[in-house]
Image (tube, rainbow, N blue to C red; front, top):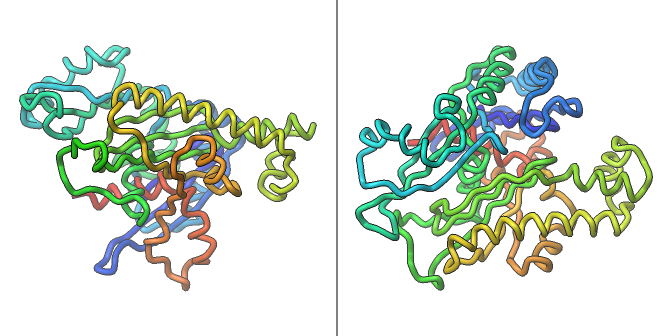
Length: 349
């Protein structure tokens, strides 16, 4: 099962696979107390493990094995170029490569890598995705998983889980080619943007190959704070107004939120463009809780000038009406991109 632990709650998804495709076998969402997790650092481990226990109790999954995601400042993801080598050869030298690119002591991080293929700049080199995460962050998350009676089988990055889940959708097509298509006109350049409560995961793909990733601290909590200021109400009441009576939210609060969101997205896309000026983003695919905001695709299309659509991985997953309220589960699908992508790791070849 895939479990997404964010600042506002636990999202759990378990999938199975048959000849007819993927099937939803368990799903639950459980809120967390405010400040139990701050900027992806677990502050109240008891609250988090209790929420995990509650999520498992609700979902009744058939396994205790968990795929988990980490995001934010503690995670370093870089595409580096190295001389062509086998995976075994690269494994032996990855510590040296990390020492050149990771701003932490190599002993203080967990490392992993993924070979993308021959580099477009130099056929004698290959592009490698290097990932490092602080040990203390990983160990804190593993601890709460263990306290809930679960077993961590895989730790992924939120941006990669996002890419996995996107492959289930009809809107985001993946080119089977292993190499770049070098013509700008032929290239399919998609930006996957998952906007949660306080974290935004961005993954730009050129013909299905990761070209840029970034995590930013901006999301639905920023809108709640704008509503709180505009209406002069408590944070809790602002959150309720956002969820229960969105049409009543003052226009100024929405404008401030969208101005901030646009600014953050433009900053990330500018960083991407600096490294890939010949491959501008052509489509923006949204997910996460903020993707449920009315008219968000129209707002972003007008402000960014990029075609925007919402991804929902559960539209192409079989959901049994005997076990679930199918419409309710599918309506939540865009919020479940990361846990769905994590659950899919079980079926990786």
